[in-house]
Amino acid sequence: MMSNWMLPYFPTACKGETVFSVLSRFAKRLRHNASKILHSLTGRLLQYHRFGGFPSRLERIAERVPTGNPWSNAWYILENHTGLSYATYFFDKSLKERLKTEFSPRRLGISQLRLQPWPTNPRFCIKCLEEQKEHGFTYFIREHQLPGVLVCYRHHVPLSIGCRTCGPYPFRKAAIFLPGECNCKLEIDPLNLEINPNLKYDHLIWIAEQSSYLVNSKEGFQGELYSAIKMMLTDNGVMRGGLVNRRKLAKDITVRFGENFLHEFHCRIYRGGHISPWLRCLIRPALRKPAFTQMVLIGTYFESITSFEETIKRPADRIESRQPNTSMEIRRRFKQNTKRLQKPMDKKGNEIDPVRLHALSNGGAISLRSLAYKLNATPWQTARACLENYIRIPLRNGAIYKLTDEKIQAIGNDLRNGMYKTQICLKYGIHEESLLAIIVDQPSLDQENATAIRARIIR
Image 1: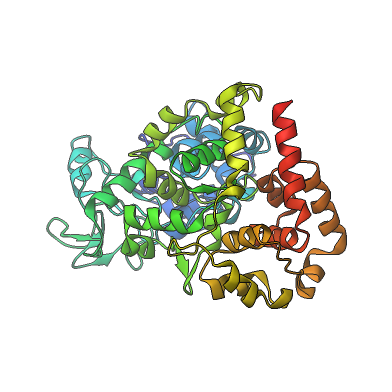
Image 2: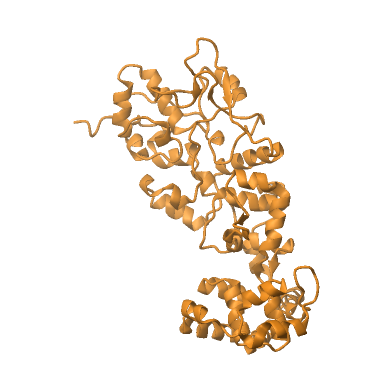
């Protein structure tokens, strides 16, 4: 009997209004039996934590609203009134299309979309409220609810989360509420978010503005993201032999945003004294990173997301337009693969002493990582010094067991065939240090790889 019922009335959502806000306005308009109707409409009690981020049961709501209402399409609700556009902005176009064609709200979990947790308290801007009151009612907008957003993207004032007297939203025993409402007899005294005084306000404004740009974008990033990021890192000297120079990247991000900002938003560069592993995975398409992380990376070298997009200018086409027979491409690749001729330096810029290198290597009875630590150099610098001084460091038994003989043999064949080291790391899912250990164990592989690459470039 109740399976085919349809609402005679449902409010039209304002631009960017959240699902929770629309349902609250609808409930306040009904007044009588509002909770029962909302429970029938959504299948659960109307609670903010259930309708704040990616609400479930949207297809149920779409079936009940009157014909002609935009909300009769569940995908429309997700795209225009949730943070879906924000979460999927940097996704590949094919993945976005698959999400749309195979759409099911139950599959769109936070873990799958790699979205940071939605704020636990609905947020509003007191100046936006004044503008909304001129139209007759107030409502929550999604731009204020995104991860890491603490200030209004338009007015640049701190966001509020409730009333100083009544406390933060949601109030106890008040499941239905709109911004600016409280139990006080007079007007609300806004309770602003507590912002860490050590944070630079310009950074907070930048995050709010860029987050707003992402969530209001219909198309998302146009082009091949990871090729574009690789170009950006290469232009700024962060790529080292085709791999990410994590130390330089960590320094650049810290200089741009500061440690307080990164710590506040759980985007830590260092963990336990070591550089976070996510920094070396930036150019791996298989590993999707949260939108906030991508924004921080792009913001390190560009003023905005739009300036990044304008500079890249369809990266996929740029990459394909580079013909291997052009002189510029040959010089670029030749330079990249002749870095092996540069003298290895330690972390302080001093040349690695061959005599000390021979003494510490102890005839190969030491691992590459331990040798690098004793030389105060990186594994890459240590490996290059070993190759130039004809020092072989046998692969440890633990590494052989972890990599397996079959994989080590396959990696050796790919090196002989001229495959780039970056591609090998991505193909087998290994760290650059493991690849260096294999090369130092079989020193001839390095020269064979360089010869094969040059032969392919010249052809």
